[in-house]
Length: 563
Ligand code: F6P
Picture: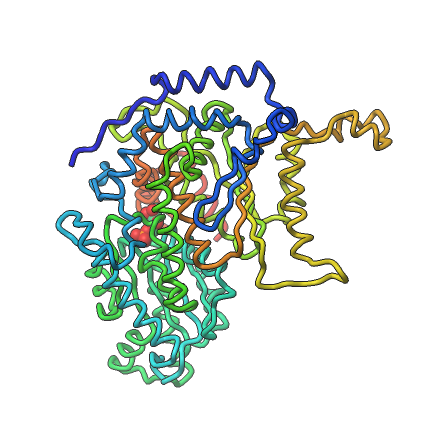
């Protein structure tokens, strides 16, 4: 089925209406304090619930009527049609001629037979693989699956990079309280040998299982690390006297200590991993949208199949909400439109994501790939140049740590940085400091920061505290710095799935307004190609060196002089 051409959002009357609204707000003066005072229903009008997450958008630089304009623009650019096309498996990733079906990864079994895409019953295929993963995970967790010397697996080492690493490591960190089988995980991604050396240094090969994850099974970093891991495993087992050096024992060790996840099962076999021990996925799953596929096998092993099912159910909850909620009340779509608002109208170049939950400490890093690899583009899906700025820089760190580092710039710097604050009402680690509940102390900070950013502190308020006049300006907070508060009951597999799906669909919404194919990533290719070309020049290949530009030659000469 052909896809619709991108609509130039900036040429639509709906964009003009939003521009007019923006100009009027600027003329009136963006003033959250005033807007809160004038509209007692502001919080109610700008609060939403999706799944079991609660959203307060009231501290954003919008009025309730702005959402209607957002919804109008979303309709004008065809968000609803494109969303339908995505969910139904149309090849909306047209530069790679692929469907974009991560939503199928979390559909329940009851949806089998309903989504036949390119001749494939995708939900049936998904559940076949999930069932195999769950059976394998159960075996590892129960100890039925043992290493080559008969010992139970204690550590899973995931080897992958980008989407084959960032999602699993983020989810592992987030779901540590659910790791209930005495199995921990580690994640090796960088081709820098320091990474694998440090991650294997103190491991016992007899109790270690490597999961090699690569969609393509051609990625330089992952295959290099997987070969290093194989050498480490075989050499260390032999050195410890755990196996003899016979080919049969080596093959048995690899079979017991290596599994793989890939769309390229032929590549897996060529690497020497038994296809029986490989879990597939499909080219309609983008790497950065894949943590809920077999790419999450390490999570299924560590936390168990039931938790993984709950994780998928959380995604599905938000998928259904995004698909079925009218746009104006659809907080997922509205958050996407809000990001467009800040990026294109307020010219905000970055967007902070600040989880008030230490377990989410890798969430901003995960979002960087999701959002920036998706929307960091300058051409639209028909090859024409974009007509607006695109792709904010997403960044962040958990609160309260960030408060003592970079929040200064968010509070008093010269740029506008919209920020999402994420917290949960309950913690798995309740603590008291005297009579003080420490989680409440933590939440006090979560609430205080968005309040300070929204309402600031005037010079008069600063003076009233007895501040000497000379330093009053330094202590003034302008306020009107926009934030969205996301509040959940607890960080669980379900709510983590919800959060990920939320940002996936926010990213999709923004990409649709900009006319971008959010599912390709051609921008990562040139560097890979050049690395292949330059690497021979680094050692003594002077012919290859002579072909490099002057700066690269000079840097290589420095290397040669110092190695
Ligand atoms: O280079 C970028 C990229 O292709 C990402 O999109 C992807 O997640 C990552 O590399 C890893 O790719 P693979 O899973 O094929 O090893």
